Image (cartoon, rainbow, N blue to C red; front, side, top):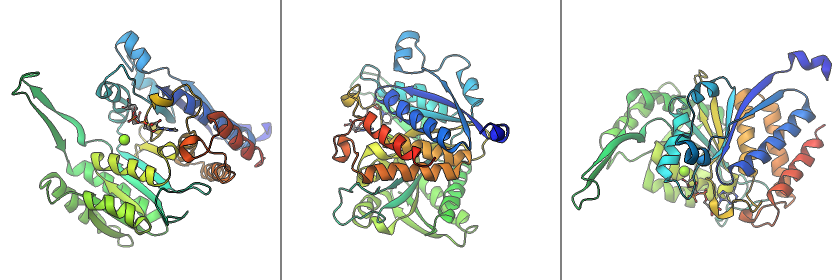
Length: 363
Ligand code: NAI
Ligand code: MG
């Protein structure tokens, strides 16, 4: 109501839908956010759209124009679709746009919650709603994706390449603190530290040592340590034994895709790229990529983006609105309004409209 409008918090959101199904799911996410803001009347959102994508790269040779990062920094949060195009090599698109935002903005914590929604099914036998409810925290600034390395003698039979993994005490410590804090805020207070310190005897031994030191400051959190290969089997065989998980950049990337599939589909899972110091805006995106195989068909699952905007609202401090929206999304899943990847036949638009209808009931 106008009487409250002056003290209503207002957030400026940068949207970067980018490639493939990115624009389809971001459009759905914004529709739902606008309906929520409209119905609850407790906060305001304003969106600025950036058309940075593989199309702009093909036209201009750049994903992010001059001064682009400075423009992004002025927003409260960034909503990102997906980047990747069949005619641009994936390492160019990933480093040109997504990593070109995450790394300079020091979004060092990549957070990936996963659970089985009411009305959906895990591909695992005997995995009910509630049995799989995890948060994976992935180190997002260095490790195996630090970008260190090179190639010599390109194209020759004696060609060599290096891909050097970087593990700094500083970056390990900050991600461990963030992971322990996350575990501490969840009911089970259980943190699994994923490692590979048997084979990777330098970087990941430091990783284990720092985890152990940080654990001293969190006596109420139970810690357990898992080698990454054994972790994959535990995720499949004993999903209920896990809660909060911390892993390196590469390990976290792989485990979180596995987690999304175990929860039912890659189409439902969100990712937050957080700067926990809040000096820079954080970036929120569905975990999936640009999915060329279904682009333009109108069947992309928008639920991953809906959960993504829930995480964004949480980070902005709108926790009540966030939990209400997640509830609406789960209600729609329970009603059986599901896209094909979840075994249904609803379109992106139909799922979006069903969620908007649930939101209107909050008013
Ligand atoms: P992908 O996630 O785009 O697709 C994998 C499979 O899942 C496809 O069969 C796709 O149709 C399906 N899928 C994905 N999202 C879905 C949704 N919302 N609803 C229904 N089905 C969905 O991964 P892929 O195929 O490995 O990569 C395609 C492109 O995306 C590549 O260029 C890759 O580099 C890029 N990519 C970008 C990411 C990002 O921007 N964060 C993350 C992952 C991949
Ligand atoms: Mg991935």
